[in-house]
Image 1 (cartoon, helix red, strand yellow):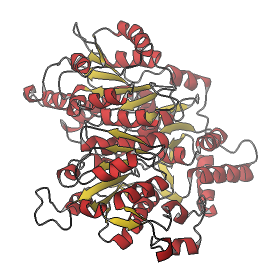
Image 2: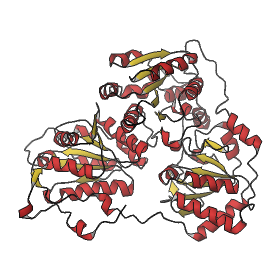
Image 3: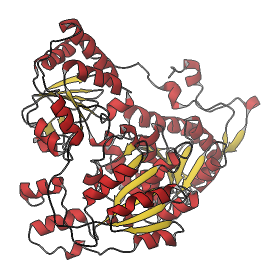
Image 4: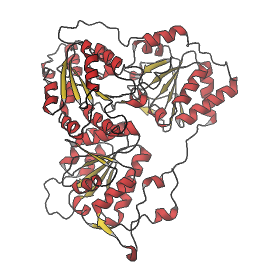
Length: 583
């Protein structure tokens, strides 16, 4: 990115000389400004407060608009679009109830540090009475997001630029709110809009303090059971190759956080997901780990499994913004502020300078026997009696993993069922979408919409959502959006007829679970009612044939997969063991 020319920045007030005067409705100029910010896709539900802007955006060349059926879904889809592309998508909602509807999707994006700009209407300034009026800012700030108001025509484009600048530099969703009567006023457009990218403080990749790298090198040399953990920061910095090179040099094992599941699956010593969703072998190894180097990973409560996963390890965190206190716990013993790629390269060079091209590492973890165990590992070996007419969700995921090509996008919903698909292996970290930081179910279908919009060119139709019945039903109206937009997505609903987390906790406490049990509605028929394809699956042997049939046509399809409600994920068994549902 280039630094802005000061004279260009100074001219960004959008005030033209009288001789060059040119006017347009503000909503039209706003649409052009948003496109100048690099936005090509909006997820929108129209109302008074945003309909002029959204229509203007949709009418401009090389843009796409995905009109959803609920405002929550507009924001959730935009967050998934960013995860899939790295670009900023726009969510657009109206004022009042249109804005209050987003307050579940918004904190999820805040906590996941996903940059999204949400264009929202505001109550008309000149209205004597407006029945949808509400103080909007407190709702947004309570969710943790900045609320940028534009109430002066002379400063409106400064506010647009500010919203995008904050979203990009702070990695957060931002709400940009403009009264809708103001949007219809004429504005001078003679002066070109200066996008925030030209003002981006691009200082290059931040390198680590050499003294800290020296400490890291000594720790890597002395560790007998070192593990290098990669997170989203590795993907953002395109540092995967450099992290692997460092691990190979020092004999460390590799693991990844859940949001980048599959990051190191190509490697024979890649352990898979670290955290509450760790496989049995990973837990066994992590119990012996004496050094964990977290690169571009936040070390959340779930990543460290409440501090129980690697209790004896010295923890070093490498991150552009390391946090000393995370989720009520000390995050690490040593912090290194740096870009993932820069720090990995520095550490490798320093290790070789200190110990030569070979040798110097105490670790002897990497053996053919361990590589075989990793390749053959079973995530969960617990046994359950499976009644007739339902299937083991672990067997479903195994069958799906076998037939779905490895380069397809997999979107994971939340809830109890989400553990099972986390164990799919051999899939790249940039083809997996899960946003779990707020613990909300009901987002999976919206995330699938966002990824489908992102892949409309090139990978269209190679998208699979794995979701539970409770989460799917929360926003099942978006099946109509899939149909109307012509988006081919395979929706695999692991249907246990209940809210899975709740029934297992209630049963463990000996309480009545009927309040969380709803039966198995004919979700396949619901999909057909929206004009899509639907099927019931009660036998995993049907999956290969049905997948071949899905590939041969161009419609979205929903599989109503009846799974046993007796199979409890290891994470749930651990929660129950710790205290009957207490985290």
